[in-house]
Length: 181
Image 1 (cartoon, helix red, strand yellow):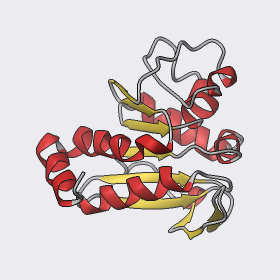
Image 2 (cartoon, rainbow, N blue to C red):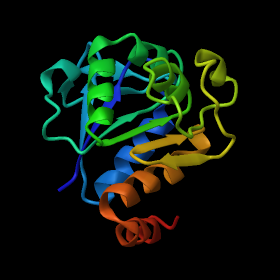
Image 3 (cartoon, one colour):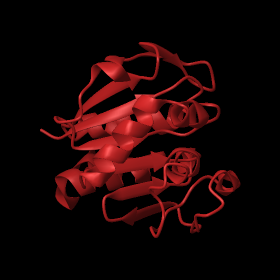
Image 4 (cartoon, rainbow, N blue to C red):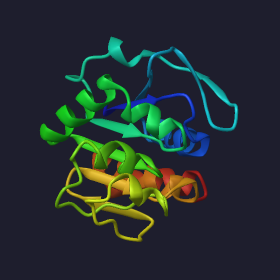
């Protein structure tokens, strides 16, 4: 069973977290919700989520991927976390899947140096957080072990890209058909 570490910080974009959680769990993935600095986090629209624990409680060895929803100030709160940066950089360097959507690609991955020489996308306007990175204007971009997406309207497409990367196109298609996607 593939295991995904989904990092949640206060101010996260609810659609970008909840849609991928749901679709990945429908695919049979074990999605662990890790709170940054707290076990309950509140999204940018006031939806609170009780996580499986604080990020510091989880070790990386058992995870196949790390996922970062965007939203503001959620992405900034992720970027300000030493634990987030350490885990994302470590997993990326190990060749494990790193997935980020909305502002998170620019605010977290761009400032961590992960996007250098890579193709990536982000929420329009968030590019200013990572001026040295050349972003493309595509809904979802896959570049090796990196998946980035523009924003909430592409949360399903983003989740299906992660499912396909970890479980194959057949499983992604099966989940999509079951969800009437």
